[in-house]
Image (cartoon, rainbow, N blue to C red; front, side, top):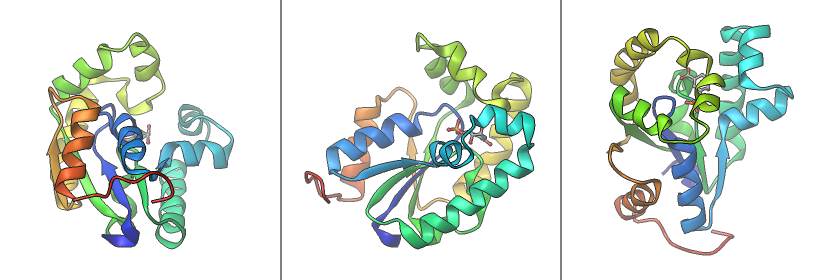
Length: 178
Ligand code: S3P
């Protein structure tokens, strides 16, 4: 496992962040989220970055973060934005898990939250459902090609998926520090 890190990758709203937090708690590892890192570096929300600087600027920020992760991060759980698979060095950062789900199951998951509207609103590429559906279809083969392990998420809780990952990768359960 590269740097003993695990990347959780997959489409927007699949539950990467929730699963990462469960996994971190269970294994005593630190969990990092690339969108959170970019927002703190830019001191702006992702939505604003897309509006004010454009998507290309955001993708460059993802590349910058990917180099930092490769060079400076170990023993961690890293949840990444849905387009992060494009950075080019995923395999040098971590063991990559693709959290796979259908578009409908993802929408059901988002809609199950009280703050569903907020979850949709903060994601620029989830504004037009027909475009988002095309995007997941287009990305699915790329997610498959850039991952080491694939896990189906539909109908499972974050805790169940986290346990599945622990068993699959034979992760140690230990209090911090790992
Ligand atoms: C994006 C996914 C978002 C965020 C940005 C772009 C994408 O992250 O990085 O809005 O291209 O799929 P989540 O997958 O965490 O929603």
